[in-house]
Length: 348
Image (tube, rainbow, N blue to C red; front, top):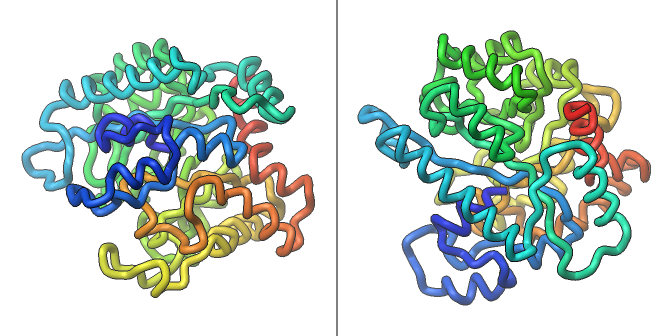
């Protein structure tokens, strides 16, 4: 979840209800997802979402890169520090609690498993989506000291350390230096957004824990943003967990961004279960799937399954998995257990 990006760049008060945020944005036209948000802290609590992976994200773009972003790595770093300040002030307000190690993770999970109070803080694990804001690989250690526990080396387009969605090419020497620092500090590699060449080079170079925080299956929706079956099998071989993403164009083929609507495409939450089930068929079990969502990650209701109004509706997934024949144990794994197991192993 891009919580700080929504709080800082989209100027959303996430302590309010989703519908209050939509009402305040009514009539605003600076973004296509205005008045279409799906995430707030009260909605997360209502949906029993007690722990999430929360991002810092700020793209550095060279003059030849037409993507939106910051013109220097220093500017991008400063932006991530502003986002970190938002997390810190939410912690001071009792809204969030940063989780950085195994005991705290398990204690917080136990707290949320036992009918928590309505104002219980939501735990968050800090991740960096796209590493270009790290001015040099030496900044990994500084970020680790701030609580950063996962890094996705690339986002969209060409990057400093790896190549992302829509780009091509491998890591290069700086990327391998970044991965070496991550290995040394025990930081999780997030394979999400890596282009194919960078994906395979990263898995070969990196020896530590790997997950994919928000990714779906290329076999169901052909696009380089999705993982091929070979990539999924490689992740399974690393005991990774792949979090299913709810961006509608990644759920249903033939989607045209800005043109197709969820109603026209008939995109439903069941489509996410299709992607989860495909991964389970490749692995022979349900140990490698989880919930990633990326809700409000630059899109809103205009690009969500049409049967989802807010993030609270994730609680409808267990019923869908039951109807597919998944056991209670498997469903508990999908909803929380698989990522908790992964983190317990990564942080042992």
